[in-house]
Image 1 (cartoon, rainbow, N blue to C red):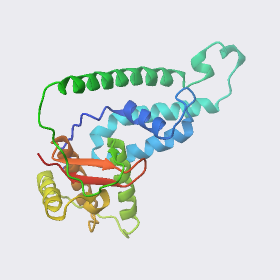
Image 2 (image 1 turned 180 degrees about the vertical axis):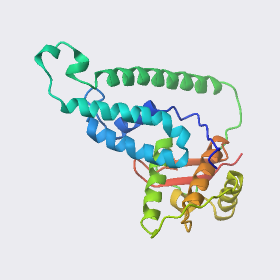
Image 3 (image 1 turned 90 degrees about the vertical axis):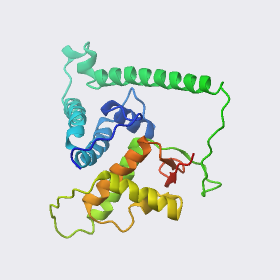
Amino acid sequence: MTDYRVNLDIYNGPMDLLLYLIRREELDIHNIPITRITEQYCAYVDTLKMLDPDLAGEFLVLAATLLEIKTRMLLPTHEADADDEELLDPRAELVRQLLEYKAFKDAAGDLRDAANLQAMRFGRKPTEIEQEEAGKDLEEVNIWDLIEAFNDLMASVGQHLTESEIIYDDTPIELHADDILDRLGREGNMTFKQIFAGRIRRTELVGLFLAMLELIRRQQITIEQEGTFGEIYVYLKTE
């Protein structure tokens, strides 16, 4: 399982996570509350380290940068440094990088929308996904929403563990993926929590979560959410 890697089109790395947190908390990107953001960012990194230590490495670099900025903001500013924007506000360079990243991300989104619009110029039979949760206002789920939900799930499981035990689990991700598809086929659409119901071993939970990401990549399942912080639903995608 440690050698398994999920690549998603919606994943873009540390800056994407930081921008996601700023948007979710509705913060001013020019005046980031560095302590608050650093704590939330590090919580996500802790979950990523559990899923894939190698992947978490690049996120730790930005975490170290956030901690450095937090430390520098606690230091007094001398009058001689008043003309230096970065010394006056240690967040200045990070804000500049975030704005540049956001500009490229928005431009990529505009290009994707233009491509989708162009694709609609050709006649083809639309694909409709049958949803049992009729009447619910659902929206696309961000990869960080899934990680946050998984982090909450792992925290709840950890509260019931009385001792730590290292268990080697060589169950192939494909078996977990088949299990998810089989349950969705037999039981119908499920919530995110129902996918993990009855599972208490951390290795099994991680395997199921990675399998879910792989099924999303293959476009075999669809994940949607009932508003911000709402329930996450898992649907079996049909042709």
